[in-house]
Structures are given as structure tokens and as C-alpha cells.
Length: 166
Image (cartoon, rainbow, N blue to C red; front, side, top):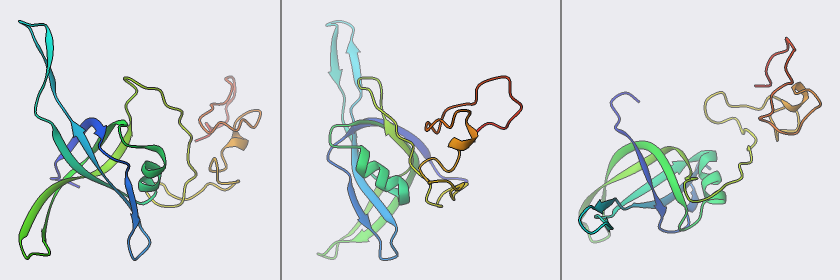
């Protein structure tokens, strides 16, 4: 949305994502990312930790289910989204305002870890939603790949005028 503040945060999850559903059936996952800046003290040649930022985050719909299934406490992640300000009243009647990150994209950081990516089937939500047919696991695209490879990201062997599988 125009005018929103988009930021990218790299840090570690402080706990497992909490997956819930709204009354209308939309999934939402909530979690906190802790990001601690480190600087090198050139005199002592030691790393010094700065003040940690704890940022509450939420992610919606199918991405929420993927986050809850894939990420756990301590996972180092990169998250990009829009800062949102929200006000609410506590049980004691106090008014509070919080700033949270509404996550658009999130994934594990591969700086200190490895990951195996499994492409999820489309469920019709999000841009270009809807399945392309087939068994749903690959959006019906595997038949377009020469040899019928089950790999949804496989590309056709060269020397052909056929369309790419996407």
C-alpha cells in the first residue's frame, strides 16, 4: 500500500509461532523477532552487543500456516513487511499503543544454517491464486516439464520452443 513503512528485519524467533484462526477462518501466526546489533570494538578486537530490538510480528492466511509449520524458537529469519500502529484497551482500562510488523515475506536465514525448501500447493489466496489443475502438489505444471519431473522448479531441457513450466 502506498505510504506504508516497509522494513526488513533479521533476527531470531523468541518462541514458536502461535497459530490461530479468526472467526471467519483466516489463519494468523504471531511471533516475536529479536534483533541485536553487534559492533566490533577496534581497540579490544571484541564484539559488543547493542540494545536488542524485540518486534512483534503477524503473518496471515496460508503464509501463517507455513510459518507455524516451518519455523521454531531460535530460528534465524529474515522478515519483510509493513509497520502498523495499533491501539487497544487493557482489562484494567488503560489505553495502550503498540507498533507491530505485518509480515509480507519471511524465510530462514542461510547464513549459519541450511534449509530444504518444499514448494506448497496453491490454495487460491494471494496474487495469481488458484491451482493450475493436476494433483495440486505442483499446480499441474509437472506435465509440462520434459520427463514429467516431480520437481516444480525444474526447467525444460533446452532446444525446445515450448513454454516454460510456470
